[in-house]
Length: 177
Ligand code: SAM
Image (cartoon, rainbow, N blue to C red; front, side, top):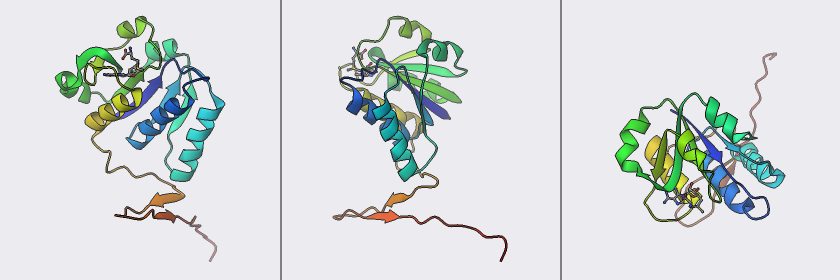
């Protein structure tokens, strides 16, 4: 299944850190890319910097959210504390081949509830878009602990007590030996 994320309502003056975490969580847990309803050079640059060092082809892109939602050729899921608990719809949603997950920052426009196919809660208490997205992706894709990123320059070697980071050298192939 291909999963994309739409970050709605990012406010550059106050959401830089959490929006960066939304994007990095999306990447780390298996989404293909993230769309922002607003451009923020700081957020976009730091996410692209992570991709260039830690690998993969995750993208971050500014879009018109209404056009994206109206034209998306897959299933659209809005995460909200007011929605239906994920376990009640998990099997249905897992049948999708292509999914767009919408997470808000401030209150989302009412029309989002209509434009999306599902309004889904991760527990019916207020918490965070990072937590909601992480639990959703883990339950839907179930590959949090198995993801590998192509062309990484850095890789962590899991360790009980130390910080071990391996620098991967670029390998070049020469055909004219
Ligand atoms: N009133 C908002 C709502 O509809 O959930 C809370 C705003 S919260 C700071 C920002 C985003 O976190 C929300 O737009 C939603 O995507 C996500 N979120 C927060 N709590 C959630 C929950 N219990 N279930 C699903 N998503 C949640």
